[in-house]
Image: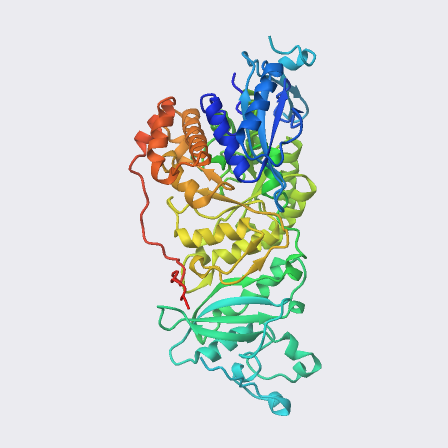
Length: 139
Length: 486
């Protein structure tokens, strides 16, 4: 399966050129771009690991692309995403987030159903990969 | 217009009998509205022969302290404070016989945090007043002191995006069709296909409550199976607006509680349940971490005609105070009423923290929202993937685009319909961020995206010539004019 979190998951994987243009757009809006990675892409896991701090005060997308390159060298077998933070009043949260790296094989999720009273069902979404310890989940 | 106060003062003012409204203190052209006053702008159409000043003063009077004759009991009160004061009357541009009347109300006239009280005061009595042919409440300035007495949207745009984990693009939805007749099982099928195909939300229609063909519990159970299955299949958070509208508050609370128990992230109500019920549900939603969708069912009965009723921009303001998270606010390009400038005004009212006066958008007052949460506008009704560039241009990024027919009517099926919409949207956002002139290059951008997406190709083909070009019945009265260079 293909996890479709993030802004551009329904498009073919973005090239570095395309990623760089999106980063440049974020920087021009005054947003700080952060690189995050995980091997636990559960839809409610918002805490992906941070590759350093959000890059404040950056002007040129090349800086982010260099860091992304480094991150891919270490965690290229995991999901990597870029998130852009807007600190302006009234927003103070993420403005854009998209996946830029995926494991070769995306095992996806199992839906567990626990039947309880009144035809009600308690649902649990489980990542197939997360049954193994962190760092040994893909490949 | 006549700029002199005609107010009769002292003992004469309270002599038994009938006195014109403009002489009773409801016309005060010298009055300077206070920062804490509520200001209402009415479009007044007096009966033939009725003085527009007197008609406007009557509106001020009948929406505050006045009755048809002088009463001595006024003298037991600080009556001058409680009288609404019409302070400005001017002819409506290009509309003979119509006048804009600006009326200020002291804050003490209103109960804190109650739309029911606000609306009972402002529109409770005066719309049937005989000396008027027609009356329309066009806009209101709500002072910060009053705004702060309301909860505001239970969740707000930012937190909704955080909870849904969706940033940087409009959200996508679809209303399940047919509106009526599907069983719970069949209904769940539509929800699953649409969500799995790439939509973020599906939606009950306004009149889907609990009918013989599908009782509400059936719908909720099958819908949540669909939501959870689609979440697992995509790895994304999904939601379906479960409509909890019912005949009594007790029934609505029961349905809302069940939605929560099933793990739904969102519930829905209809405007027709009434302002107090809406505020109750907004408080419930805040307490229970639930996004609250409002379907503006019934609004066109009083918002659409330009000369009588209440403008939708006022309803949007009231609903932001009342505390809903989503509100249908027009599509511009779709099948329902909405001219671009007026719609832009509604969207600004929903989404901005400060609205400057913009007469060309029908926004008559500067409005501070005092950090009240933002309200997510919803565009729904007769829109399709081929219009994506226009939708993004007119409506911006913080909006929910709902393609009902444009998803479910896709020739290759519902999943394909959903995928077509999602691909079209992502391609357009990508292009916009890259700095392309996406509005003009829109068709090209879509055609290029369709090269690797058969469902989009097929959607563009089927709906290529569908547009709804009719004249709007409600438009701004002012057109932008170049400012005079001195």
